[in-house]
Length: 146
Image (cartoon, rainbow, N blue to C red; front, side):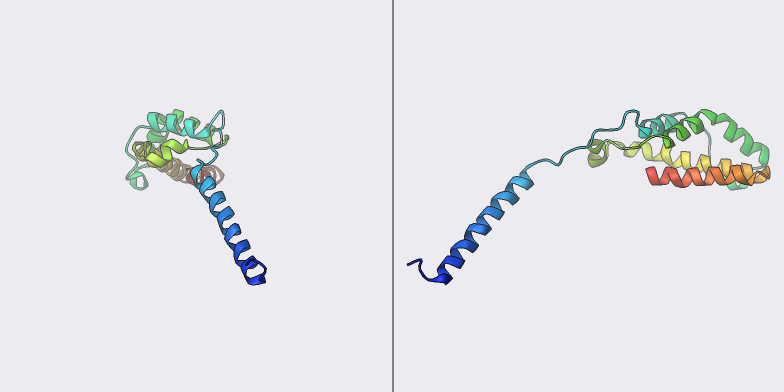
């Protein structure tokens, strides 16, 4: 009965499909390996910075030099924490990312990038182009990390 080569090929193909099905079921049933969070984690610094940032940045482009200076000065600690986070590896906890548990932090993160842009605008007004560029590059780096 199994002496015909066609039957052997069909039997081999069915066995291969069965092995692949078992391997696929095993692979899908396992949870993916989770990378450990870096310690210290720059993302934690971003969260701390977002909690201490104060002021309205919505119209920072229209503010005077003195108003921008006051806004940036009052947020010196937020800028320090943000830049500290940029020196570290950043990773958001996957549990939070998958459940959107950290969506309430997005407003604070947006204000941080606006703070960097406001700082850059202030440095331009002060005719300090290298420092303005640093602020704008930090805003881009922050966006990449987020």
